[in-house]
Length: 86
Image 1 (cartoon, helix red, strand yellow):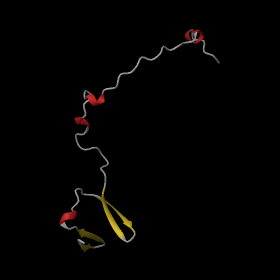
Image 2: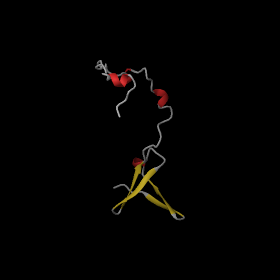
Image 3: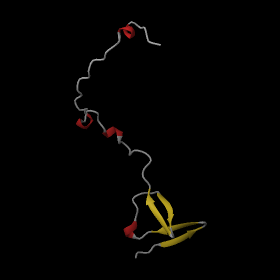
Image 4: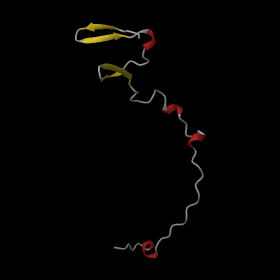
């Protein structure tokens, strides 16, 4: 089992992770699971920079499938004249 060094800094602690346990983020979630303390990367709260600039509506992935012709709408003569039923 790998071990890590705990450094006390005032009322806070820093854990120095071994080389194989480095995280690819600057912020992690911390929670207790029994006696263990679990660190897990947090998912970003915003889209990556330039994400929406990379989406083009002309992309074939955005094409709608063919829509079949809808049946004609039947309008009652009274409604067509503006006489709405009450």
